[in-house]
Length: 415
Image 1 (cartoon, helix red, strand yellow):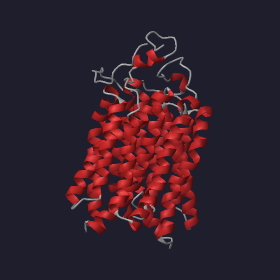
Image 2 (cartoon, rainbow, N blue to C red):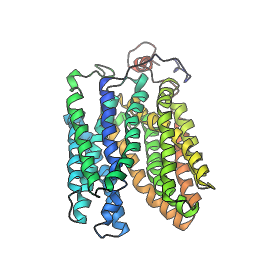
Image 3 (cartoon, helix red, strand yellow):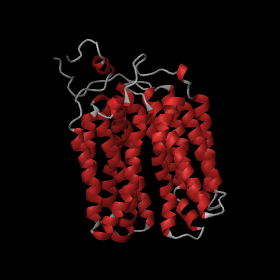
Image 4 (cartoon, one colour):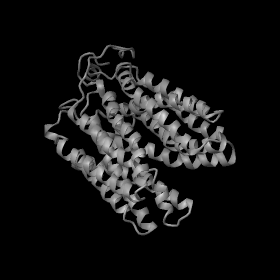
């Protein structure tokens, strides 16, 4: 019986990312620039309809909730009509709903349109990630994911600054700007993404992995646990509690929240390319174990920050860890699913959405009933749990030759 190759560093040849990967990165940039413009303005815009803070929160939650509801259907839709069409239609739905949101005359209209945007967002994001995994070889899958996420990060940093300028014109201007950037992203996708017959795949002739097989794969399970933990910690606890911690505990201004978040975003952006390369060359397993362990300890320590400088330093370390956390789990999904199939990506996305919805609610309850330390500790514990689950991951590197050796009937396959 042969043994798997040890999970040790090896020198990988320099790779060129495929055309579809570059196009998806450009699309991600335009999507996130518009999204970043709207996010800071949306609560104020919702408040202008004369509703209370609970209903303002409902507008923010409607987007994530409808993403979650739509995701299972998107996975099946991808298998029927393909990623390119679903991606374009999804972007179109978000563009139309965002433009109409700027014209909303009542609160129910705004709520309905934001929910509709969540459906389009699920279609776009799941289709984009499925296409990315399907057109990238395992040996540089993490680097392709890193480039794609880099588009989101750069757009996310530019968006809020533009949003502040547009908000001085009117509260509705950011919504029209968002619609325009989405139209650009949609046109780029339709024109430049290659149709299936002109697209190279990771392993021509290899049959898709059945979903029932994928869900039993420890790589997929570890990725889903990680996705839930990230949704809970990054999109939930960190985003919901750090702004309150800055003002109420550290006695800083709201401007400092933007500063520490910007520091974390820059750290993540700088670390993204090296992290993605390490995930491909050193392996998914060590990246998952170390990154989630560091992130868990760091985020739990945020509650004990004594000043804004310490908070910024901790969030910078957390930002570096998220560079690994954003690439390694998604690469694992592609490894488990063979780079094919929308349903595994849909389930992976749903895990993050569930964490993002539940995290702020439960963390807020923990702050009210116990302390910030317990609330941040809950996120830290989930991240550490992801590191523990990752101990069960295989040590073999996800290189092309490893995938070849794993196919039935190939030489060197364990018997």
